[in-house]
Image 1 (cartoon, helix red, strand yellow):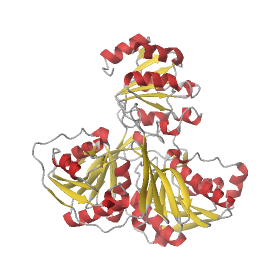
Image 2 (tube, rainbow over the protein chains, first blue to last red):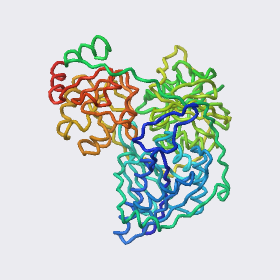
Image 3 (cartoon, helix red, strand yellow):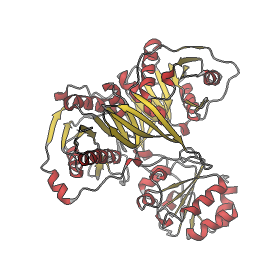
Image 4 (cartoon, rainbow over the protein chains, first blue to last red):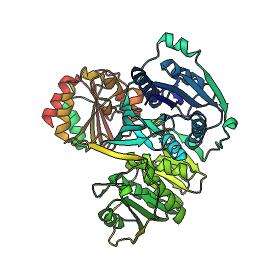
Length: 256
Length: 311
């Protein structure tokens, strides 16, 4: 395939290494003044798009990598990270309203209709709401084929062969293009952006849209009644020896 | 309440996680209709019709359903919903359920409630977020509730004496633009990480990939699966597929043994729902000891072979 446009969706989430705290009112997780990063599965998606672009460049082909994020103004930090990794340009759909997966899928559909990509890549899930829905929903709304939980991707002319992580092993499917791809952990190891590339990314184009520009109904369908801490574990018991441990596992916990 | 349960099956057998999802469907309090789609689903239909709580079985027999491609299954769900008007559509939160259900939800223009661990009413559900570091209770305002169920949160449904009646599911015309090429299922004597009742995991303290053999030796004695922390994966000791944690696999076995793992937050997120946690680490200050039911402060290179010998 000689000329490809790849759209990659990126979400800004609380960094994976941050300890999550529920707010005092029990209505949400604390997110103010807490380190955020690009959703790790979206980093894998961005990396995959850049790898496809690099492979095509060697074969005298051309790919444009467009990254998109929906959310508040700070989503632009995530887009700049993707641009520093090697994406060509960015689209920010700005809103301070809560966005649930169906709403994001509808916003992305509107962006797809403007950009007409051959391939859309999303992370298989975001590590905040853990829904694992948006890619499949987008594929349904577009009536495109979907290849989810990918651990290997090969693009050929107008077709894509994808190895998918399924329960108990892997499965390989072939889809026509355009298609929606969602990434699993083993697909690749994302690169770090170099300092010169971070500087260059500041000058790459970033277009802004509002929800109204895209004429999408983003009203939440699910109402969060409460958020609670998970039950605390009663840990901390120290055993003296291997014999002591095996005795406790056999006779106290009864797991051996 | 009238619920539709999407049956997952492979090699003529109903998937274990579907039995847990059936219990969740029955908990809603109304009727449960099962939907079986496949090329030759007869033996699966016979099994499903005798599951406790199933009141009717819809059968979609078509070569298009031979492999669980999401495009054909989602359009079948949509047609079935249009004809029967179910209030709930339910599947296991397995690779299959996760692939199919959101696509059907979008086509029906309703939200999905993923990976539920509790049911508080016909429209109110409990689900973990942030890899189980917070628990959300959510209420759906949609007419149709599309739900995927975390298997470990509900017991498996049993069998009934009488067989539920069967009828044909509505016909669909959707052509799938994707095709199945091949599959490669792991044929290992060791259980799978996701569903193992015992898991032994190694961290950076293992020092290299070869030393993981110590864990495999111990695992083989007790029929355990072997996993790893992100630190061990990032250090290149083992493959990414072994990673347990927020961005890896989430496990909840009966017994979890953490070896040479310090207990970073993102690792705890992947294993803290295990029933009994054992930590073996030479650093008594390691945070893993705070969540461990039994901590052994010892050099893993002497403790693990000793355990293997004495098991």
